[in-house]
Length: 485
Image (cartoon, rainbow, N blue to C red; front, side, top):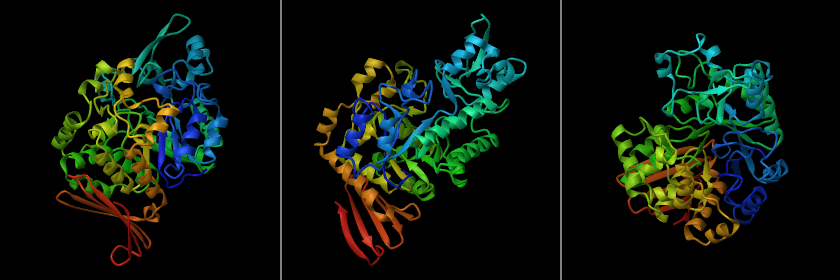
């Protein structure tokens, strides 16, 4: 199926049921009207990071199923796959062959060797300090080859995720072959994970390096374009970077919306939210929650620095079972730019606040994505997080089919499905339409318009009550129907 302007579910292959077949059953049993697409998080054999350290892309992890299972889902829901353009697993055939054969390996050009990259074998402290890092270490690991020699190899993230040298022809060929296979296996959209890190150049910050990053993006666009497949670069950073990408006609993520919405609901004002909703692009995917934490860096300069601090503290103070330690080294998280919590728990496990947050998301420009834990209004999973000591697991509960069936009885889950169905069916949400945002005191009004169709969200940011009204032939003097109260 091709990309549609309908709500996309984000889920792991084994988080809504234990495999892809059970996921498909859940979708068809409960979510036909609510979900139009599915981002199945990495379903390939992987050695770490819940799938984001892929060992290969040509097969599905046998614990989840097969490509036939993926394609079966894709016949009814448009699909997004992940391509880790920046790295491959250290346990992969590619890297293991390199360790064994070194310069004789057919994959020797896949990886970034410090001696070759820096010329003199090592960067100066000044060069190292320039590199954009989310973790407090130089971006390399020291490896030992089978012949006993050692070398530093570029490694931005964990030791199981070895960076690829996207400048080399061997890697270009690997990228092309992998992307073509994804297109042939049912992808409507391919998410380029950690895309901004893919280009490295000495004496730069090695993050979104221009113009090289644009060359890479256009090369990928040309590969998948022949299959009418779209690409979505994944970048957590200052909002001006995704805006720049959007200006060139690409899909982007709205990672600023989660914190701006929390700020509006915590502080009962839509002032900052209004400004963003009026300036952000329509060709985007919106999120409130993902498999990672809630990003703070994405709202820099969209909120004043003091307001960023305030809303971050409010997450811990007003959220349910949200503690700073969950986003710390104690829980294997050195990324200080994220807060680990479910979105429902960030709002104190309050049904009314949570439903209003989703309504705001669905009225925002773009196509909404709803993470599977958010789909079920899930609370923080402290048991799983304490078991793994991974802070992000607080938002990665494994739901059984029995649990999912039980969750459907909760009013908040039923109402969320109704909201999603409204978003999918109303013509005023067309991506070629317009948005109008009004805010006065604690009131927020968002109107979406397309041709003669209009739909308006009228919300109270203190009581969290809201109403949705559809207008045929314009809201000024057209027929009025209340679709949510």
